[in-house]
Each structure stands twice: as structure tokens, then as C-alpha cells.
Length: 287
Image (cartoon, rainbow, N blue to C red; front, side):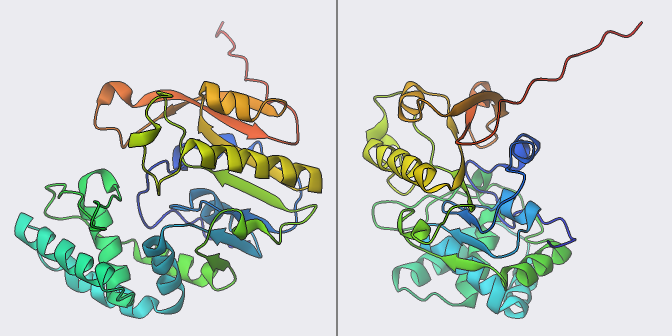
């Protein structure tokens, strides 16, 4: 394992930094290969830094940025330092967003695109990643003129670690075709909507109810193969139904990305096919 504690280089919807302690205490005692098919910001894998990890995401721009950090870090750092020297005015932000969209739409997946991906994440509203029907990144500016785009020590540690990691961009089932008995899979799965009628408007790479059912079926197949699996999601009737029979534990969470402060607290579940329920610590009264 890497001795440097790493944190995500981007803010990502559904990121698990606040849940890490809850996840740590529920990890299997031992496992062989580590798989994370919905890596997103990678809070868990980066904090654990397991050897021989396999990370995957369907978001091509995110995966491209991971591979560029691994393969061309110096060029990314040079570009980010150049961008950070400029005061991020409204005009500059939207110019950089236009430059990024030109690259995205022309499939110019180069080092500059990866640097712009990181820069926009740090300077857009709430670190969201969203594209419109034309495929253009359209998140507005966060109105902060001076934000550091990177932590130099952290991103260097990530680059070094990723050199031993298998990185893929494919469907979650394809990403797990090699998973075997004794391996561990963490599913930071796209959230099921809290309102069961809102699937049509729910868009994290178009993850539908059918996709959630396909994921649950995969979870059961992996269980039969002897693969240790842990999954996090909203605590909804659908999720409870799909993972009936597995160990389901409810925890309180904060949802920092929600624009409505009243909706920033909620319930999520951690689902496992191994282990026992974690007993809550008793509070002792001071005498």
C-alpha cells in the first residue's frame, strides 16, 4: 500500500470522503484483487491504495483524466499552473469552458483537455459534471476568482500510485469479467432517485431502473462466485427490494452538492454479501 494518504483530485457527485470511516470498518479482513467499477472521484481506492487495483468509469472524460495524470503529469501540472496564474473572472471561466467543449466535441483527448477538466471542476458550481443534449459541459461558474486547481503533493502521489492500477472505461459488467473468488468489489453505484417516479429526469450517465436491476443481478452472480461485494446507495424501496437477503445497514449522510440546504441530509445504505452488522457505539454518561 502507498504510505501517502491520497484524496480525490476532483469533486464528484456522490463522492464518499465523508463516509470513509463507515466503509473502512466494513471492509473484508482480506481480499485479493480490488475492483471499483464506478470509481468517480475515487475516495475509497485512493485512501486505501490497494495493490493491483482495477478502476473503471463510464465517463470517458474522467477516465481520460486519470490516465493523463498517470502518464503525463508534468504536462498537466504545467498547464494547471499556467491557468491558476490568471484571475478566474466570469469571462475567463466561460472561455475555458468553451475550449474544453471544443476538445470534447472534436474528440481531442489530450493532456490539455485533462487539465481543463480539473480546472473546470474546481471553478464550476459545486463541482458538478453535467452535459446538455448537445454533449456540451454546461455547469456555470462558481464565482470564485482564486481557487487552487490542485494539491501538488497529492496529485504527484496519485500519479505514482496509478502506474500500478488497471484503468478502464466500459460498462460495469464488462469491468468485472475477471473478478474471481476472494476478490473485493466496491460498488459506488449511481443513486436510485428518492422519488420512484423520477427516473426519466435522473441522469448520471443515464442510469435507469433497468440498469439498477442489472447491477443487482450482477451483485448476486458475484456472490455465487465467492467475490466479496459492498455497495452504497440511497435508502429507497427499490434498493431494499433489489438487495433483499443481503446485509443492509442504514447510515446518516450529508449531501453537499444539493443546491437546497434542507436536502443536504439524508439516509443511505451500505450493502454487503459478507460479514456482520456493525453495532453502534454506546454513549456513556459523564459522572
